[in-house]
Image (cartoon, rainbow, N blue to C red):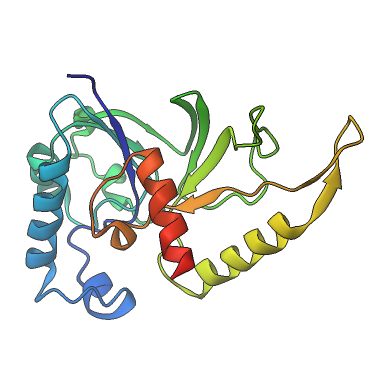
Length: 207
């Protein structure tokens, strides 16, 4: 079976305040939240699949986070987030990660993905499209959750996509802007492929 690559952001394992106040996730407590996310993750992700976590994985101690990582299926890669304080702990075992980086660019089924915890509104490859005008580059991020900042980001994208520019051949075209917030609550805590995130993002913004 061929392996798949999934993406997800801002899981915030062990972070009680995300459940009760900031995201209002609706679980009884952080323990129930953790178990639900692990269940959703392991139903989707197989042993050899790759999961790129776009920051803010865990608010737990080194011991808690080490045990958590052993329970998650797949080959894990981490884009460093502002709440990933576990990375600084001396007794943290980072061997569970294939890599930990602040920024990365990867190929995904003939498209480029720009990966950062923070949204980059003018990202590398933004203007690249195929012969049919489909985007060849996507910017995947987290950080803003489902907040006013996310609404502002969506307004910026709408304004950008409505703007017209003239390319080097003298052809007028709308400016591409393909940022996708891979916030875990948008997918009901399930890691998604790039194609699944494209559909999820489109459906959510049409609601």
